[in-house]
Length: 285
Image (cartoon, rainbow, N blue to C red):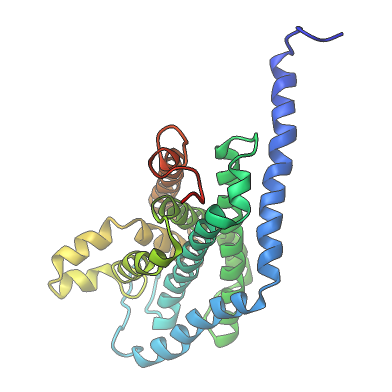
């Protein structure tokens, strides 16, 4: 009866959403379910930054005296300054692990089948992005609770208010991991790629020390790189949020970089222009 009759645009959009929302939900739920079956992954993601907070902060408490710099209105303990950077570490490591899982799934796992599904690749990749960001946010919250138990001065209100900012930073780093998965063709090459991304990004930023210390010490070119590093903006947005302040420029840069990285990754997975055209079908020889 309705053959040959064009559906109204509103009806068509509702039909598309009726397929997209369950697909996104299923992808995120699958990743969360897989994560919950691996409690060691959560423990390791919290133990690593907790050790940094306990050992590194204690050892360098008097070496890295933090002066009165925004967003702080007085001198703060080094562990207070270090905590946002360690949250960035949690998000960064999980973003890279999500990228590793993406490479595995693309070669021999579920993603190999999903990429041939009738849904657009944009929806599938956005689902993987949301799943990776959600898991990063979950691990960051657990670490924050541990940091509060250790003695870092963070109020529950500021923790809750910081969740959207931490989630945005998680999206940016998950998008970076998604982009890396475009170019890493084999699992054997992933370890080297992680070392060339994680450690320079983490150390050349404001995660461990204020940027003015780099400038003061004469490391001008490192200071310049750190100033323009997207990871620095992500860490600073979290640092401000944890004291109840909003750093608009840092949040804006983090959001723009997240969108840009996702768009580039989406281009890489385009079968006509990106990964599929250069390297053949996923999992192929």
